[in-house]
Image 1 (cartoon, rainbow, N blue to C red):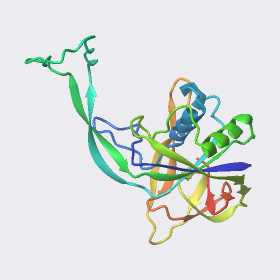
Image 2: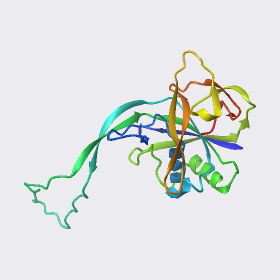
Image 3: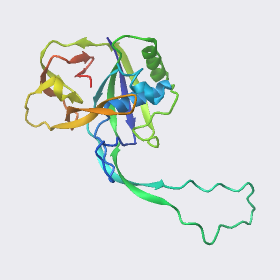
Image 4: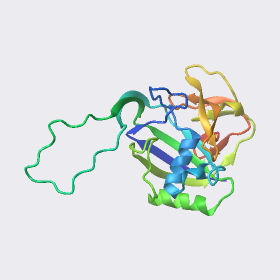
Length: 239
Protein backbone atom coordinates (compact mmCIF):
# COMPACT_ATOMS: atom_id res chain seq x y z
CA UNK A 1 0.00 0.00 0.00
CA UNK A 2 1.40 3.38 -1.04
CA UNK A 3 1.27 6.22 1.45
CA UNK A 4 1.24 9.92 0.56
CA UNK A 5 3.16 12.02 3.10
CA UNK A 6 2.06 15.66 3.41
CA UNK A 7 2.99 18.59 5.64
CA UNK A 8 -0.04 20.69 6.55
CA UNK A 9 0.72 24.03 8.21
CA UNK A 10 -0.78 27.47 8.75
CA UNK A 11 -0.45 30.64 10.80
CA UNK A 12 -3.63 29.88 12.75
CA UNK A 13 -5.99 26.92 13.08
CA UNK A 14 -9.32 26.03 14.68
CA UNK A 15 -11.10 22.65 14.88
CA UNK A 16 -14.38 23.19 16.72
CA UNK A 17 -15.06 20.68 19.50
CA UNK A 18 -18.38 18.85 19.28
CA UNK A 19 -19.12 19.64 22.95
CA UNK A 20 -18.20 23.35 22.71
CA UNK A 21 -20.69 25.91 24.07
CA UNK A 22 -20.67 29.69 23.65
CA UNK A 23 -16.88 29.49 24.08
CA UNK A 24 -15.72 27.76 20.89
CA UNK A 25 -13.03 25.36 22.10
CA UNK A 26 -10.76 23.67 19.58
CA UNK A 27 -9.38 20.15 19.30
CA UNK A 28 -5.57 20.14 19.74
CA UNK A 29 -5.14 18.15 16.51
CA UNK A 30 -7.23 17.74 13.36
CA UNK A 31 -9.77 14.88 13.48
CA UNK A 32 -9.95 12.38 10.63
CA UNK A 33 -13.13 14.02 9.30
CA UNK A 34 -11.33 17.39 9.05
CA UNK A 35 -8.52 15.84 7.01
CA UNK A 36 -11.10 14.25 4.70
CA UNK A 37 -12.60 17.71 4.23
CA UNK A 38 -9.17 19.00 3.23
CA UNK A 39 -8.86 16.24 0.60
CA UNK A 40 -12.35 17.02 -0.69
CA UNK A 41 -11.37 20.68 -1.13
CA UNK A 42 -8.23 19.73 -3.05
CA UNK A 43 -10.13 17.32 -5.32
CA UNK A 44 -13.18 19.56 -5.73
CA UNK A 45 -15.67 17.17 -4.09
CA UNK A 46 -18.80 18.12 -2.17
CA UNK A 47 -19.51 17.45 1.51
CA UNK A 48 -21.27 14.14 0.82
CA UNK A 49 -17.97 12.74 -0.46
CA UNK A 50 -16.73 12.37 3.13
CA UNK A 51 -19.30 9.65 3.72
CA UNK A 52 -19.13 8.08 0.25
CA UNK A 53 -16.12 8.65 -2.01
CA UNK A 54 -13.62 9.26 0.82
CA UNK A 55 -15.00 6.78 3.38
CA UNK A 56 -12.19 4.26 2.76
CA UNK A 57 -9.32 6.76 2.94
CA UNK A 58 -6.80 5.96 5.66
CA UNK A 59 -5.49 8.96 7.61
CA UNK A 60 -2.70 9.33 10.17
CA UNK A 61 -1.85 12.62 11.92
CA UNK A 62 1.45 13.50 13.59
CA UNK A 63 3.02 16.56 15.16
CA UNK A 64 3.24 18.45 18.43
CA UNK A 65 0.22 20.14 20.00
CA UNK A 66 0.38 23.85 19.05
CA UNK A 67 0.09 26.70 21.53
CA UNK A 68 -3.45 28.03 21.95
CA UNK A 69 -4.94 31.48 22.52
CA UNK A 70 -8.35 33.14 22.61
CA UNK A 71 -9.60 35.30 19.75
CA UNK A 72 -12.80 37.31 19.39
CA UNK A 73 -14.61 37.15 16.06
CA UNK A 74 -17.47 39.39 14.95
CA UNK A 75 -20.49 37.43 13.76
CA UNK A 76 -23.12 39.41 11.86
CA UNK A 77 -26.79 38.62 12.31
CA UNK A 78 -28.02 40.81 9.47
CA UNK A 79 -26.85 41.06 5.85
CA UNK A 80 -24.70 44.10 5.02
CA UNK A 81 -26.41 47.08 3.40
CA UNK A 82 -26.01 47.19 -0.38
CA UNK A 83 -23.91 50.04 -1.75
CA UNK A 84 -25.66 52.67 -3.93
CA UNK A 85 -25.20 52.55 -7.69
CA UNK A 86 -23.65 56.01 -7.69
CA UNK A 87 -21.42 57.60 -5.07
CA UNK A 88 -20.79 61.34 -5.29
CA UNK A 89 -17.44 62.87 -4.49
CA UNK A 90 -18.84 65.06 -1.70
CA UNK A 91 -21.21 62.43 -0.33
CA UNK A 92 -21.09 61.91 3.42
CA UNK A 93 -22.22 59.04 5.62
CA UNK A 94 -25.43 59.09 7.58
CA UNK A 95 -25.28 60.94 10.88
CA UNK A 96 -27.61 58.38 12.48
CA UNK A 97 -26.69 55.00 11.03
CA UNK A 98 -28.84 51.98 11.84
CA UNK A 99 -27.66 49.90 14.75
CA UNK A 100 -25.66 46.86 13.69
CA UNK A 101 -26.91 43.39 14.64
CA UNK A 102 -23.70 41.58 15.47
CA UNK A 103 -22.13 39.71 18.34
CA UNK A 104 -18.58 39.08 19.50
CA UNK A 105 -17.86 35.36 19.72
CA UNK A 106 -14.85 33.87 21.55
CA UNK A 107 -12.90 31.19 19.71
CA UNK A 108 -9.86 29.23 20.86
CA UNK A 109 -7.28 29.24 18.06
CA UNK A 110 -4.12 27.21 17.49
CA UNK A 111 -0.92 29.20 16.94
CA UNK A 112 1.26 28.06 14.02
CA UNK A 113 -0.18 24.54 13.67
CA UNK A 114 2.14 22.18 11.79
CA UNK A 115 1.03 18.60 11.20
CA UNK A 116 2.37 15.59 9.30
CA UNK A 117 -0.32 13.68 7.39
CA UNK A 118 -0.05 10.13 6.08
CA UNK A 119 -2.75 9.35 3.51
CA UNK A 120 -3.59 6.09 1.76
CA UNK A 121 -6.34 4.34 -0.17
CA UNK A 122 -6.56 0.56 0.47
CA UNK A 123 -7.17 0.12 -3.26
CA UNK A 124 -5.04 2.32 -5.49
CA UNK A 125 -7.34 4.35 -7.71
CA UNK A 126 -7.27 7.13 -10.26
CA UNK A 127 -8.54 9.52 -7.59
CA UNK A 128 -5.56 8.75 -5.34
CA UNK A 129 -3.20 9.34 -8.27
CA UNK A 130 -4.97 12.65 -8.94
CA UNK A 131 -4.58 13.65 -5.28
CA UNK A 132 -0.84 12.89 -5.36
CA UNK A 133 -0.40 14.88 -8.58
CA UNK A 134 -2.41 17.85 -7.38
CA UNK A 135 -0.53 18.17 -4.08
CA UNK A 136 2.84 17.67 -5.76
CA UNK A 137 2.04 20.35 -8.37
CA UNK A 138 0.22 22.58 -5.84
CA UNK A 139 -3.10 22.53 -7.73
CA UNK A 140 -6.42 22.43 -5.88
CA UNK A 141 -10.04 23.27 -6.60
CA UNK A 142 -10.56 25.18 -3.35
CA UNK A 143 -7.92 26.92 -1.26
CA UNK A 144 -6.87 24.68 1.68
CA UNK A 145 -7.69 25.99 5.13
CA UNK A 146 -6.92 24.96 8.71
CA UNK A 147 -10.43 24.28 9.99
CA UNK A 148 -12.07 27.64 9.23
CA UNK A 149 -12.32 29.03 5.70
CA UNK A 150 -10.66 32.27 6.89
CA UNK A 151 -7.56 30.42 8.13
CA UNK A 152 -5.63 29.70 4.95
CA UNK A 153 -3.08 26.90 5.08
CA UNK A 154 -0.23 25.39 3.08
CA UNK A 155 -0.13 21.77 1.88
CA UNK A 156 3.39 20.56 1.05
CA UNK A 157 4.18 17.31 -0.77
CA UNK A 158 6.81 15.25 1.07
CA UNK A 159 6.75 11.94 -0.77
CA UNK A 160 4.77 8.90 -1.87
CA UNK A 161 6.21 5.48 -1.13
CA UNK A 162 5.13 1.95 -0.13
CA UNK A 163 4.36 1.29 3.52
CA UNK A 164 5.11 -1.86 5.51
CA UNK A 165 2.69 -3.42 8.03
CA UNK A 166 4.54 -4.26 11.24
CA UNK A 167 4.13 -7.56 13.13
CA UNK A 168 2.19 -7.64 16.40
CA UNK A 169 4.22 -6.52 19.39
CA UNK A 170 5.73 -3.45 21.05
CA UNK A 171 6.26 -0.42 18.82
CA UNK A 172 7.17 3.25 19.24
CA UNK A 173 4.38 5.14 17.47
CA UNK A 174 4.02 8.81 16.58
CA UNK A 175 1.04 11.16 16.48
CA UNK A 176 -2.59 10.34 17.15
CA UNK A 177 -3.10 6.69 18.09
CA UNK A 178 -6.52 4.96 18.32
CA UNK A 179 -6.92 3.87 21.94
CA UNK A 180 -9.14 0.94 20.97
CA UNK A 181 -6.39 -0.59 18.79
CA UNK A 182 -3.45 -0.50 21.23
CA UNK A 183 -2.39 -1.21 24.80
CA UNK A 184 -0.54 1.79 26.18
CA UNK A 185 2.80 1.02 27.86
CA UNK A 186 3.61 3.52 30.61
CA UNK A 187 6.82 5.52 30.23
CA UNK A 188 8.32 8.32 32.28
CA UNK A 189 8.83 11.90 31.03
CA UNK A 190 6.12 11.58 28.38
CA UNK A 191 2.82 13.45 28.42
CA UNK A 192 0.36 11.07 26.76
CA UNK A 193 -3.23 12.36 26.85
CA UNK A 194 -6.51 10.60 26.10
CA UNK A 195 -9.09 12.51 24.07
CA UNK A 196 -12.13 11.85 21.89
CA UNK A 197 -12.23 12.97 18.26
CA UNK A 198 -14.68 12.54 15.37
CA UNK A 199 -13.76 9.49 13.27
CA UNK A 200 -16.55 9.03 10.72
CA UNK A 201 -19.46 11.03 9.33
CA UNK A 202 -22.62 9.76 7.65
CA UNK A 203 -24.37 11.18 4.59
CA UNK A 204 -26.83 12.90 6.96
CA UNK A 205 -23.92 14.69 8.72
CA UNK A 206 -23.99 12.55 11.88
CA UNK A 207 -20.51 12.17 13.41
CA UNK A 208 -19.21 9.18 15.35
CA UNK A 209 -16.36 9.64 17.84
CA UNK A 210 -13.53 7.46 19.08
CA UNK A 211 -10.83 7.69 21.81
CA UNK A 212 -7.23 8.51 20.89
CA UNK A 213 -3.86 8.79 22.62
CA UNK A 214 -1.67 11.82 21.87
CA UNK A 215 1.76 12.83 23.16
CA UNK A 216 1.56 16.64 23.45
CA UNK A 217 5.15 17.30 22.29
CA UNK A 218 4.94 14.93 19.33
CA UNK A 219 7.37 12.45 20.89
CA UNK A 220 7.11 8.70 20.06
CA UNK A 221 5.52 6.57 22.79
CA UNK A 222 5.39 2.81 23.30
CA UNK A 223 2.29 0.74 22.66
CA UNK A 224 1.50 -2.90 22.08
CA UNK A 225 -0.51 -3.38 18.90
CA UNK A 226 -1.00 -5.41 15.75
CA UNK A 227 -2.12 -2.46 13.59
CA UNK A 228 1.11 -0.42 13.21
CA UNK A 229 2.56 0.66 9.87
CA UNK A 230 5.94 2.05 8.88
CA UNK A 231 6.95 4.31 6.00
CA UNK A 232 10.33 6.03 6.02
CA UNK A 233 11.01 7.41 9.51
CA UNK A 234 7.33 7.33 10.50
CA UNK A 235 5.75 4.54 12.54
CA UNK A 236 2.13 4.83 13.59
CA UNK A 237 -1.49 3.84 13.22
CA UNK A 238 -4.26 5.05 10.96
CA UNK A 239 -7.17 6.81 12.60
